[in-house]
Image (cartoon, rainbow, N blue to C red; front, side):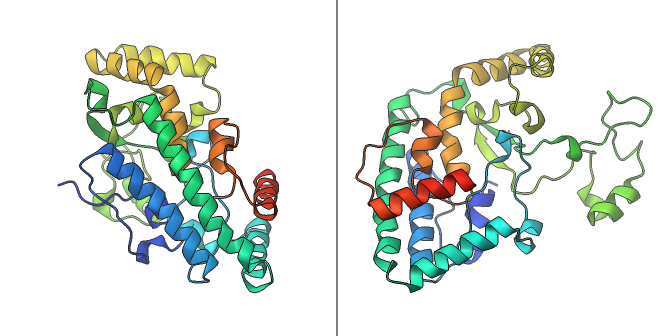
Length: 281
């Protein structure tokens, strides 16, 4: 059964208790709209003091680990600084500037939807790459257990001490079927979105290791060939979609991610502050 999406941007940082449209959706356009409304709603609640501020976080495809529920207990100096800044903005004479962020996020989200439409996302013409699959978005090296004698073999419960995994990661017995762990926030996505390099290779897509991965994918037959086509032909789609995988929003984020010239009138006090904060992030 396909149910509501469980990706981190819809549930992380306290969003799990908010009334958001989490699908399932019948069209890609509906999904885009739900993502845009999610960020607009977050900015509105933040400006009204009904939701905690948090700085944007990179998606795992940038070479970082995906956010997880345990991260909500952690607050580094940058996070504390960001929350204090937003709190002061709401409670000072800059309250008008804080509310101006709502207008800015609406304009930026509309620009993003137009960009995706121009790419052809959501068009009626169907393709094999529009079919759906699981996207293991956080396949990092820390999440793969290999045989201690043969590092090319991913171990299973039958050949590995699963009790050690369960005790280390506090998972029940049925939670370990293979030794690829951390499936939190894994969701169903179109194949073109699943056709990406693992997180530990994404930071260097033209490396020898990345080419080796593609070579192995090509040996898998028709499905491997479909993956290779999706990785090549839909790279710009995935790059654009990363806008929706940021955990949080800041002024100028969409234009920076998509390498676009800003085409909107961003309030000077709000826009310049946002750009400065992005550099700090």
